[in-house]
Length: 125
Image (cartoon, rainbow, N blue to C red):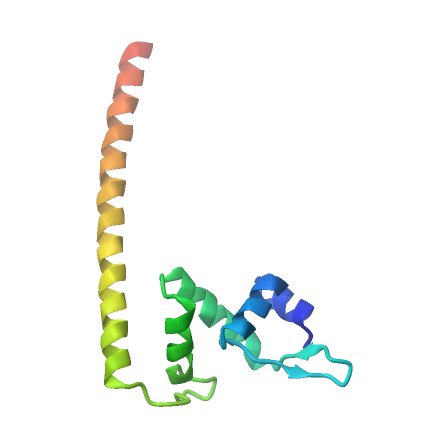
């Protein structure tokens, strides 16, 4: 598939797809005319990349991780090193801390909203 179709199917801009290529996260074959040509696998790869970015990983870490992720057949492409597993465990702990902080922030905001709602109701009465 061409880059435009991959962008449409994955919900990612063509510019981002080109960036992924420069970072070694995505590869494309070239047609005789020089156009990028991606296989069906690329949609899943782009979705994985987006998910890892959303988790706060940078492109260097994602490039290390992608070869160790399972393909559609359920088998990893390569075996992760113990160092990579340690780094990913630390990333997971960082994400868990962020989730805890966000939940705490939401609880404070809920209290403020509740208090503000009570004040508004009291003034209206």
